[in-house]
Image (cartoon, one colour):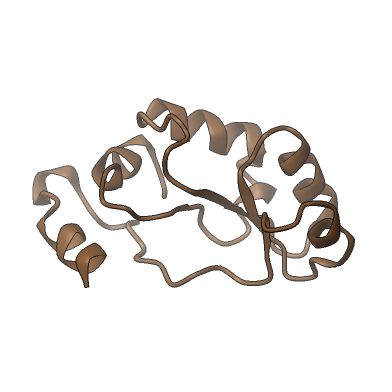
Length: 113
């Protein structure tokens, strides 16, 4: 997810909302949560913030309500937040070059298959 338009495009498709790799370093967890909400996310879909190897940011994000994080070296965080820390990002479709005018057809096809 690179912006609110991406969030709007996938809401209702049953897809997880995954940040770009290492997004916590430049967007922060508050920024990612704000982007999710600006796109209409209300918590029904799984939202995942990629924290790379930064355990400090991952802990802060989880404490402040981020549903899930990717943390490559999960360790203590994975034990403290069971089921909320992933060691790697799940398979994802990068929407960086997707544009609203292209519609949702290929997203729906990808999500369904």
